[in-house]
Each structure stands twice: as C-alpha cells, then as structure tokens.
Image (tube, rainbow, N blue to C red; front, side):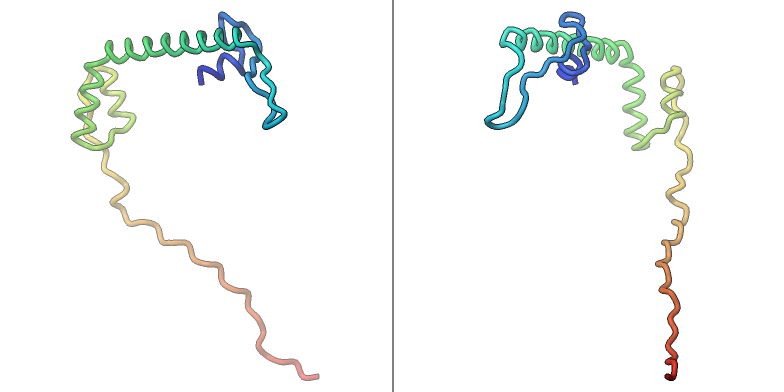
Length: 126
C-alpha cells in the first residue's frame, strides 16, 4: 500500500504528486519508464512511510497496553466481544458480560424451491 501511495496516488512529500510506473507493457513490449535513481528514491520514500507508520502503531499499542490486556482477557473468557464491550474497555471500565447470543434461537426454515408451473395432462381431441 505504501508503494501505491508513492507511485500511483502521488502521496509523497518527497517525490510530489506525480505518478511513477516502473513498468509498462508485457513480454517484448516491456518498457522501464523511470530511471534507476528515481526507483531508489521511490524505495526510500516507501521505507520512510513504512517506518513512520510502524512507529505510530507501536506507540499506540504501548500507550494502550492496559486496554489491550483487558481486551485479550475478555477474548480468552468469552471468545468474542462486541462493540459495547470494546467501548467499556476503551472508557477504562471493566467489560460487561456478552449479550445472549441469537445463535441459540431456532434457525429460520430453509427456503422452499419454487414449484413447477401446472401443466395440463388432458389431451385435446382433434
């Protein structure tokens, strides 16, 4: 995704809002449309974006570790958690027990196949 951000969508502070393509065509029609130096700049920008976003993700996880531990324990206890339980955890409250599952209710009857159109079995005398 970071590579597409840089090469296709022009989302690079360093390279600007240009579209870069490293290949065009197939087989004998293959053409490299950007230089090796530009490819190195693209690679460096992709690496910068990945490293920057990795740091953001890691900081979020580390600063919310207590909530992640509560969420992990809730998942171990109940196997799944719903939005209300996640909201409780994010608000710093203990998660409420899960709501009763609707999966225990009787499943709806299967759809019936459409019946064949009625055909007349009587013969017309000619």
